[in-house]
Amino acid sequence: MVSVATLGTASEPPRAAFAVGRNVGGAVVRNRVRRRLRSALVEHHDLLRPGCGYLVIADAAAADATYGELDGWVSAALRAHSHGARR
Image (cartoon, rainbow, N blue to C red; front, side, top):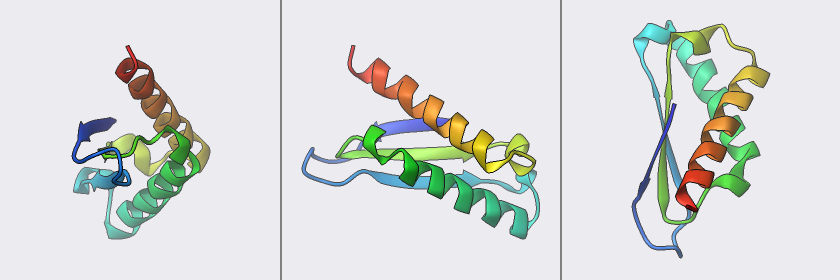
């Protein structure tokens, strides 16, 4: 899940935070998921809006997901938000 909030002005870069709780797994698994989510967000930087903050929340399914699956989920969530924000 990706939540978005306007935090600043359009001249400020977008910010991102990750919530990967213990329900995802041990520290090694949580850190791996966080790294993969961060990489997926970088891959889709063109969908991030200046001045916005993004909170990427991982659930237990993220522990067993491949990078491709995580990347697809992040992409879909960002695209859904970017389309909704333009209406």
